[in-house]
Length: 51
Image (cartoon, rainbow, N blue to C red; front, side, top):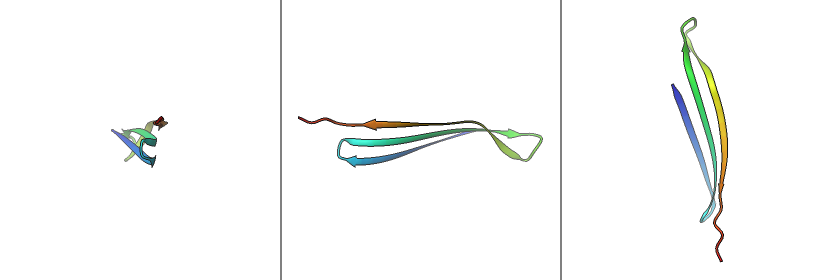
């Protein structure tokens, strides 16, 4: 089971900042809960130069 989240902030028209988070879980059969197997994040900046 996995989950991805993307947060986007538009600084101004054509300039964006993205925060990306990914998580994976697996059900632990010995316990009645989920256990995290992977967690990662990334940052992306998109900038437009106009001239």
